[in-house]
Image 1: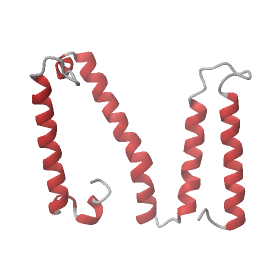
Image 2 (image 1 turned 60 degrees about the horizontal axis):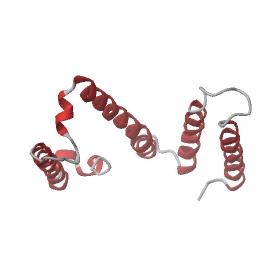
Image 3 (image 1 turned 90 degrees about the horizontal axis):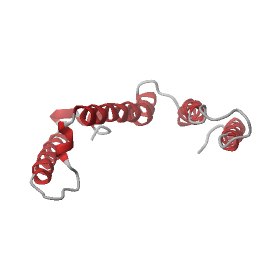
Length: 139
């Protein structure tokens, strides 16, 4: 739905409007159904707790940020900035490598569990860079 919004004029499109209405009705029906079950799959009563509701809201916002960074940014670079596919890959490779390195920062600096994956990503990135420079693109 978010991928087609730019092309189909968001709420001017009957397809996108139908998807949003269907998703809203299904979500409301799910909450009502789960509220009245003895052993619900999703216990919606837990959202009465402020801590649980705020933690879920924060995780939802994180999901929106990650979605926009990983899905919508390449489309932005392709349509508005008119960059080729290989340059978009190079742009996001750096972010992927730094995110992988951040996952192991809490570990010891010696030859711990994070040393081999970090080196593997570095070797992979160098090989991709050499391949792209030699062939002109990934495709």
